Length: 105
Image (cartoon, rainbow, N blue to C red; front, side, top):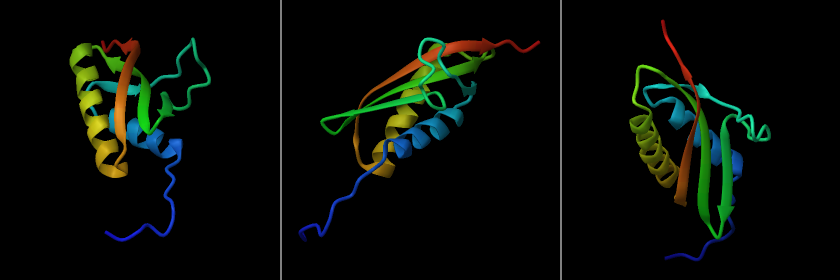
């Protein structure tokens, strides 16, 4: 294997974008939410990186027509897979916070 000629840096905003777009693609997710308790969260995604491991907090609003637990599990699976495949970094934890429910009449 060749010796690397430089360093690659992945900005946290890249991880945030991947997580956001992947989350919004899951059926039952209405939109991302800005948590009331933490208005500093951008676009419903909080990214932390410690020792090369990624921890994500995703804040969402779901449709009432879907099962909240199943939506959260799908988000965790899909986001982990996408970040691992696209960036090659290890995901330690994905916390899904359901902030509200859209009730359709």
